[in-house]
Image (tube, rainbow, N blue to C red):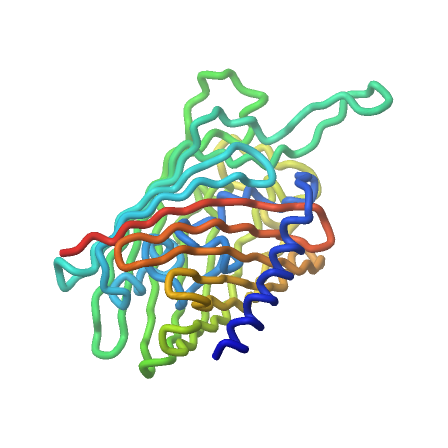
Length: 338
């Protein structure tokens, strides 16, 4: 067992070196990183965890897990993305006090939206305009519930999204935010004490707010090696956002965008969480994504201190190993005894 722990520790150290050796530039960010951040410890798992991670992350990633992970907890995380404003996420999960498990998450930022475009003076003194890739979100709130149906757990979620118009830099500062609601669902089954599968969808019925809340489809499986390790395999498909991913910025004042120029992003991620010592967990992940015919490899990792009452983690995600991009986050969770 000690040899296995040393192996995982060495692998995680190499992965951490690969991540942290990068410097941040924003040019290759496809969409604002806040879009895919579901909170909790999910960043270290590569940004896509359908079955291996409960808690506040499950509110968006797969609400059915709220019923499988029987806990009452609160969680908060703070993110330093590659591009755009820092943002924070807070949430609470109640899977103990009622047969119907429930969870709530909230995302926002303290600074003002930078706008979709960023004009700078180039080396030759000529102004150039590029996408800032700042998230237009003013606030994002999600509420989810889960109930057991035989051996399967079913989850449903609703989201409230308030976002600045995509053409913010061309409008007056008092322009009104666009507000809308979205829907989501999830299902998960514990096929054995060690094996779990699940599927989910997030941001359905999002036509009005699609540029700020694209639809995500997720599917995955997890193997639990007792309390020592977890192995996860996840697939995620994200709706293309032509405001950011089209050949030119689409300035649609209604908030809708034309996706005819783009194609959905597909992402496959393998991740693991390993208990090295009684209080220390190592998290590592590697993924392959493809969007608009371009493939990229991502790596992520984190260190988490865990005991029965609280957990604290530092996480880092490098979305593309061929470019110099690093997204950092810290998260604190507290489990309340009921």
